Image (tube, rainbow, N blue to C red):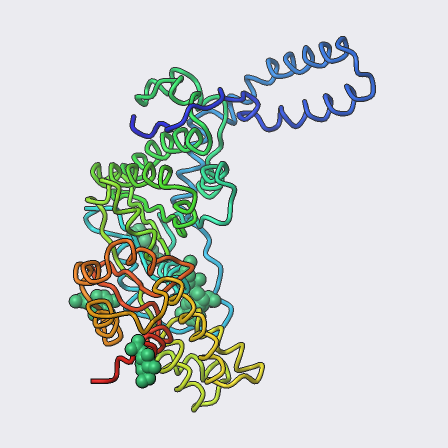
Length: 422
Ligand SMILES: Nc1ncnc2c1ncn2[C@@H]1O[C@H](COP(=O)(O)OP(=O)(O)O)[C@@H](O)[C@H]1O
Ligand SMILES: *[C@@H]1O[C@H](CO)[C@@H](O)[C@H](O)[C@H]1NC(C)=O
Ligand SMILES: *[C@@H]1O[C@H](CO)[C@@H](O)[C@H](O)[C@H]1NC(C)=O
Ligand SMILES: *[C@@H]1O[C@H](CO)[C@@H](O)[C@H](O)[C@H]1NC(C)=O
Ligand SMILES: [Mg+2]
């Protein structure tokens, strides 16, 4: 079992498997023991609770057995995750949606999928749009700004999986090729991941047997996991890979920003991944979007051409600032100052940038360049720094190219390095 955790960890706290019990114990232990704090009282309470648990064991077994837990999880897959409606004006992106629908229902299942695209290009919305017409067989989970230790537990909630003592017995684990001590010695969120993934495999098999095709699990914003170090992400990738190898479950990972992709690619499980990209809108779609948001035609065209291109997050920001009475020039200048500052921090005096770095930047202003050419001209370290989310000069694409990160960066770099001069 390769999913065991890297670090040594405290033993399992038994109260984690029994929330109701813990609640009751907390109440009695808290209220009574505080008032009359004698060892005697605490012993009586402990005996009461132990007794209570024994009495309940048989009732609990009926509602919390692995079979019941898994039946609920299976039902969640069969119903699919509920996808909320989109509230604001919606740009239709038939090509991106069709591509993603192919990813969500692959035939046959040959790989797990990593969906990439810059922050704010509309990945989450496009994935939800692709699921909405038919959510049967698809569970969608988005990683929020959760505490790292809670990541697996949040995923379990989306899957309607319940951790309890019955999925934590030696026999249950042994049947699934895992030793109890491997689990008890793991720290969170790895421990919960192991327990969850074992049931997930069982349920995926049940789904496939019943419906003749694998179910789909989408985990969005996995860059939030990568931010905390690559270990858990690699464990999840390994799971996704073996699920694909066994044609058991279609796992789709969605990630923002170029700095995560190289991390994902460090994993040998990446060999089994299909990487697809959600890109920006076309300039025409972007202008149309701004017109629908009440921007006048002249500003809309200039804002798209000079600042935002088809990147939703920039279009939204520009709309807001135009609404406050700012001019396109002013808005561009703010972005320009940011880009100039970032470049100066990395290069010092920009007039000192010479070929091949300067000529590479100028070629990037005109379009995508192969990864190898850029890394050779700029060096790997510098390339990595230019990709970082807080710098956002370069963007990485799964077709092994780099582009400048956005339209305004392209224009700024072109002016700062005098690219239009012969
Ligand atoms: N098709 C669309 N039509 C209108 N607005 C959209 C569309 N797709 C995304 N947006 C908006 O763009 C912003 C970024 O979208 P999101 O899906 O969160 O991007 P990502 O997941 O790539 O970061 C959000 O405010 C979202 O509401
Ligand atoms: C939804 O997808 C499932 C699984 O692929 C399929 O069996 C079902 O017919 C689809 N439902 C609709 C309404 O298209
Ligand atoms: C670009 O041209 C300006 C004015 O001609 C000059 O001051 C500046 O140093 C040049 N920048 C670079 C990077 O060559
Ligand atoms: C690679 O992808 C980028 C971004 O989607 C695109 O601009 C570029 O044209 C593509 N290049 C090749 C060679 O396919
Ligand atoms: Mg998103």
